Amino acid sequence: MANVMHITALFGWVCLLGFSTRAPAQDNFTLAIRNQSTSPRLMLVAVEFADHSQRLVVTSGQTLLTALAKERGFEKWPNANEVARTAALVGRDKPFQFTKPETQKMLEATYTAEVLAEVRKKLGGLTTADLRSRLDKVDGFKNVYPADPELRSRYKLAVAHVLLEKGIPVQINCLDASLGLAQ
Image 1 (cartoon, helix red, strand yellow):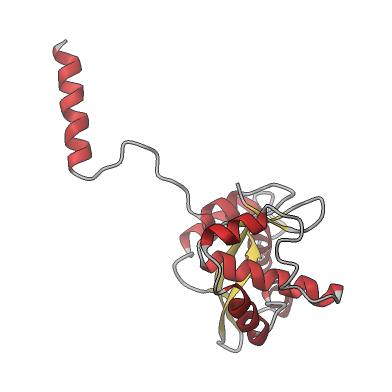
Image 2 (cartoon, one colour):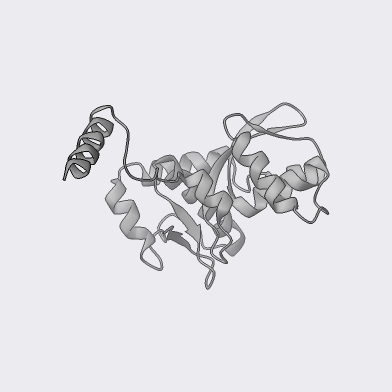
């Protein structure tokens, strides 16, 4: 009985001091980096290119890992994915630098600043709950996408950008390449 009271008292002090007794929730970046699914989780990443320009881009964890491995020259190592994952998690608080044309191309945004501004305007009046519910529908963002299939994919990533800015986790669904709510 005394041991139970001692543990209860210790638990109370841990809670009072502000420590969580649960495992910390993983953030979207970590979940995207660790995602190995055919429905990749998307994330916003700060990238610095060879011309020293910096951009916030939407990418999957696997694309970032591949770009890091190619940029740093260890893509052929047997443990390249693990090394890249560690590099990504350690370097996440500053822009990732890419100077090789091949890796820069992998992380270039396919949508322009104008398209992003247009999507922000179209989605700006919607609540987070409205945006989340639209992700559950096949054509939830139909009014945002243009009819041209090539432009549609660009707008889709701009929509993902806006959703991620609002803290809504997004993935590319493997069956139809639509946006979905990441689990």
